[in-house]
Image (cartoon, rainbow, N blue to C red; front, side, top):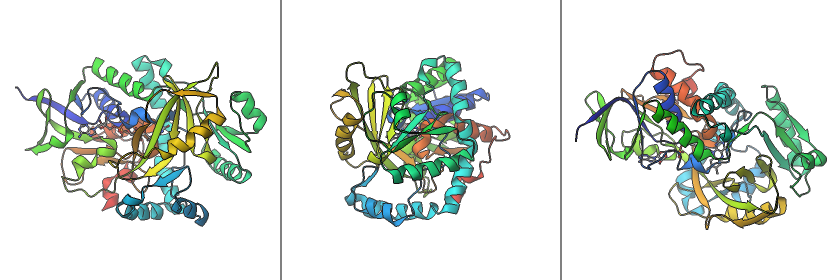
Length: 417
Ligand SMILES: Cc1cc2nc3c(=O)[nH]c(=O)nc-3n(C[C@H](O)[C@H](O)[C@H](O)COP(=O)(O)OP(=O)(O)OC[C@H]3O[C@@H](n4cnc5c(N)ncnc54)[C@H](O)[C@@H]3O)c2cc1C
């Protein structure tokens, strides 16, 4: 078999890899996108809540108040659970996460990511227009419901803080909630509605549509295992179903599996995962859900996907490959049924995924410090659907010597020593 040659190999065809591949291609690079699956968007980029979170200015940091920390420690909250058997392994990471969540450092993370968050929907809009899939973006905004006065008051304070960074929205009372989402039932203290976020009813389909656009423009998609990547002189070589491929440059964009490439190369980057689950159910009768709704105090999201109403859960701290424990789905189901008229489940068992996270909740974007031609683009935590295209732009600008639209320093791998 002849050896294929290209300019750049992008490893991983989730929203992040596809976003990087498209932006490199736009800048004249010949790109080959590699995944272990035959299609793009089959993993985390498939299973998320579908929200393009351009109003989420403040990342999800570790709580600093004793009350929530104690509640999490008891392992009883619906928002966060942990797998006791894995605790010794991820405890050091949790300590780093806690340290990175001090008010000053959390603000630093938020401000570093702000230019990306602000551009996130614009980048999706451009790609959606180019891919000709307008049906994959809905202008729903995002409604978050609170059942207690205390949690609503905290949410309103957070919202007021976000407002200072240009986030638009409203605080809803029970009546306005009912007018907006007439099929919801419950006793709510109130809700916070942000109007800007976009919603895709098929996140995996969106990644696939972008991959089709990449292919239409001459990009190639090959099936291969990124663990076969090796340096060969000044080039990078990988084995694929179509034989071996070499490139001057390679981008690691394998989300929660990115360690499979960086660890053997000697990088000890603190990439961890926050796992999450989803399941789809049919809506009963003519019941319609207008857009994504977070039941914040009960720790789940309802999202009106093309496939059905998707219930996504909060965070589970467990090793990426540990067996699933869908207890958060089981607990959410009766509560979700009380919130919205839901019928039978569409799948036999819940889907499990993993949000790829660094302790400071910022992705790693930029050059691999010790390997010329190797680039990183992973760790997009809770916001990888949102940030895939915009971080693809940032990376491509860095790789092609353009002036980056945002300061890339906070995302450099060197921040981990
Ligand atoms: C329950 C849940 C809800 C979420 N909700 C939202 C939301 O509403 N909005 C939002 O913005 N984000 C959300 N997220 C986060 C978001 O889904 C992720 O941040 C994002 O999908 C990460 O994208 P990625 O491309 O980095 O990873 P992935 O989509 O996982 O892609 C990685 C790719 O690498 C490939 N790969 C892995 N190993 C190899 C190998 N050895 N060889 C070749 N290929 C390999 C995989 O097959 C995969 O295609 C949510 C996440 C979860 C779990």
